[in-house]
Length: 106
Length: 120
Image (cartoon, rainbow over all chains, first blue to last red; front, side):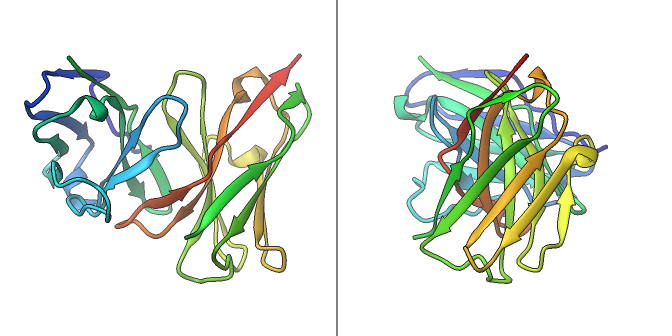
């Protein structure tokens, strides 16, 4: 079965750029979405179709996807960005989530 | 603005069937544009997709749960439902219902989630 791998944690200083990766076999051949989840809340879509931002998502969120790795980048990271982040891709008719990355801003 | 709301028992006994309903408001579940989905999250863990259903009732399942999952849709009531049979403690989780557009646009609307605990 298809798997997506994310680092368990990433730390960043406020104002710096944070990069969270999502790896899978030939992942660049699939579309990737990214979700932000804060404690006690439902996930929120922050990137779809590899790099597109839904309305209302700050411009500091960006995405890319090539080869075996998709990357979510948060430029000028703010303390409000501290959350868990999940990547999502499809494997034919099934949805596959990455294991999640806890982003710490300190 | 479409909203989804999960409902169902918060406590289920082991070996019994977990039943949840997702009521959709602000939009029609009959739209062929979307799939409707159940996703769960074990305490302190990541997201696990359970199944999708479309407006015609066609279902798609996580292979690891397929034997125990039954998902239905009621377009007259604008809701869809999940039944998970033979539950164990490992099925204790927050269950989310969600709207799925497609592989490009992913899951775009989530319910607030409902916590289900399986007791022995």
